[in-house]
Every structure is written in C-alpha cells, then in structure tokens.
Image 1 (tube, rainbow, N blue to C red):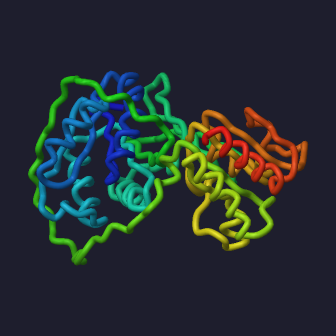
Image 2: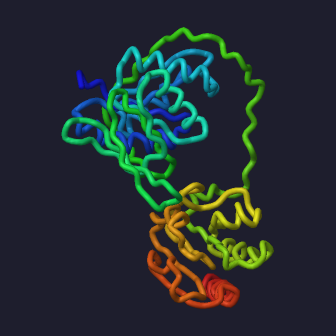
Length: 321
C-alpha cells in the first residue's frame, strides 16, 4: 500500500467536523498515523486549537481569500491539490449536501473510490478501510472495501459522538495556495431564523406517525412539548405521503439522540427506528399491542394516543406545578 500518510477529516460544518475526528481517531490509531483536520479559509487559529482539543493531531489550514465562503468548485480545487501533495490514506468528509457533492467530485478527480453515508468504519488487518452503510430503506447493510488510496467516505451528522475536549498538543500547519477565481460570485449569505432548537440537538422529542389522524391533532404534541420543553418530530409518511411537513425523523431524514423520545401512533418501521435508535429512553404509545416500535421501547403504553396524551399532559402539569 505504500507509506502511510494519515487520516483526514473535513466538513464545512464545525460540529460535524468534530464528530468526524471521533470517527477517525480509532482508524488513525490502528494505522499508527496522524489524524488531521482540514480547514479552508484564512485566519483560523482559534478553530484549529479547538479541533486539536477534540482529537486532531494536526490541522491543515489552506489560506486563500476565495475559500472564506464555501464554494464547491474552489473547495474542490483546494482539496484536490492538497490531497495530491500530501497523499492521505483516508479522507472522511461530512455528509452534508455540500459534503456529498464535494466527496464524489473529489473521488473522481483523484481517480479513487467513495462510500457515501457510512454508519461504521474500521481498518482490516492489511490496513485497508472497510465501511458499512444501510441501504434499501434499512432492509440491508452493504459492506465495502477499497482497491486504492486515498479511501474517501462520507459520514452523516450524529453518527458518532464528539470526543470530550481536553488540553493536548498538536500542530497547525498553514498552507498558502493559489486558486482560480470562482466562476460564480456569492453576493450575500443570510442565515434563516429559527425560533426552536434544532431537533437533532433536542433533549426531548415527541414524535407522531400514521396514527395521527389530522395535522391539526399535533396540537396535543405541541402542548406536551411545551410542558416538557421538548421538540416535535414526525415520520416520513406524514411528510412524503400526506405532505404535512417538509422533514422527518428516520434513515433518510433527521438522526436524533434525545434523552427522552416519545413515539405516538408510530408502527416502528426500520426506516424510522434507524433515525432514533440511539435515544436514551424510548416511550412508545400505540393501540396495536403487536406494534414493532414496542421492540425498541423502554416503556410501552398500549392505547389510544388521543386519550393517553391529554392524560399525560394533565398529570405532568399537576406534578410540575
């Protein structure tokens, strides 16, 4: 395979980049090589120090004004040049919309393989990366290995827990690079306002499924969410089939890891369970005593959610008041 040149992690999302470091740490240890985080932009000393605390042995900072804002062509050119110069063995890229696009193009330019949306990664006895990913709506798992380096894989958000930060030594290497001007100019970037906590970060999630008869019935969920200071979620059928919502919790949607998950009227199809399986405590409410969701639940309530939810809210208000 040749000389080992390290494991790299890159994402334009800083929190996801920290998760990639947690994924890459055991891989680098197995290969007895460095774990590097890649930052694209200008003055990033503070971010570099933060990444070293989260497990990076080295931070590669590509300094170019055209990289201050994420632009796919410019970032692709920078990563391609850097990879050809440094020759990494493994490149982990965050599976954001931008990251997926970037990873596939990078693999093409480097004439190598890319495995998308990996849920497990490990190094075999010969030093090659092996990946696992869920396919066919959760009905199968594909195991893949590589034939050449660099070995590129994308990792979805919330697949790995960030390492706890601690003081440790590491190196920040600043790399000057000339890049062509992007062909499209970004005029303005405006952050969308969000009044609620992102469901991926919520400590408590109340989720509804096909057992909810009308969209208006989510008022029950809102009342419970207000009482518990939680967030509301839903399954894919309510978004894709009924068009009630624009996103969902599940394999192809949001991945959540709350301290408390309450599933209401949810059958428990594997596609949904894949998105909430790491919840610490799972409460399931369903009138079908054979519902599959009960197999992953810590607490089971068999009955009509339209009777159970108001009763829970009433009791909680008594207790909390």
